[in-house]
Picture 1 (cartoon, rainbow, N blue to C red):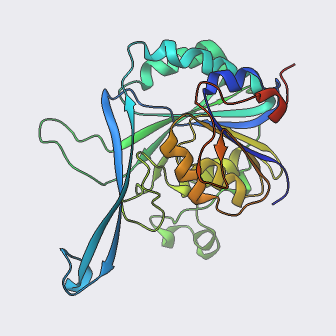
Picture 2: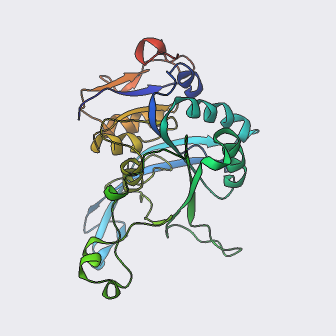
Length: 305
């Protein structure tokens, strides 16, 4: 992959405010959901062992080893007040043909849509994507919540990138009814996406709390950007957005103020030479500055105009 990529440790609002208007082709963010909890995840690895502590496929036993735990606070006194200036910066940074994906859940999606309608305009709302999964505990007091909501906006609804022919296809439920050619090609996904979460201890897992599947981000990046475009995620977490962009030959800008996020991204981008790390000492795998003072942003990224 060619092009310059940036990973910032610091306050996303400060960094966004320093960037040039109309400089980003796609924004995806997965902010804290305001669950009122401490979100944490312990990285778990398993290895087949006759003296293991858990039983798996075909009755084989496995030994479990616990690794590092990452966490962050997911409680806000004024959640929309926290989001609004950051969402306005996202709008300013998008190119005229750019798109914005906002990932949230049932607790706040209704309030966030009203705010986004105000910023982007109701006519710029394109989709509410439902990411459905079937994993984890199930309450017996109400219908178990097993989906997230992803709101899609175009900066200009009359012209935006949507690469319909490049999007991954899914199988027909009744392939015999559509003919061999259509069945072989598959069909375009709807606004309901079935995709399992990243299980703790799975091959994709970094151990970072709330990590999102690479397949979800690849679908978004493929559909709403082109090769060489710049993709921004300013709640970067484990860096899945950047990895999707990297593998699809896009440039990326990732921002987070959580040390665990930086360490997770350090693992995901071990040897890439065309990534600028700001506020994180990549050589020694540690923070190099405080999250409130990420360094001279204007020297590291395109200046705001």
